[in-house]
Image (tube, rainbow, N blue to C red; front, top):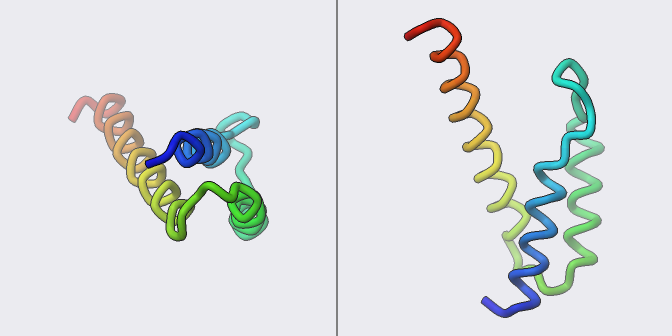
Length: 76
């Protein structure tokens, strides 16, 4: 991994995780995916599949945290 690739990945992770609204407001899924694709296309240091990998990992972490929060609230 090059320094440029590392920086591009960090920026991509920030953009994927960015959620400027309260919990009851969400992104328009297709518009968000399209915008991330455009931005990733401008980050020339990214490799093919980086956006897919970052998005998949973020979704997995969010699901895992959601399950932890549900279990914590319900006392399971």
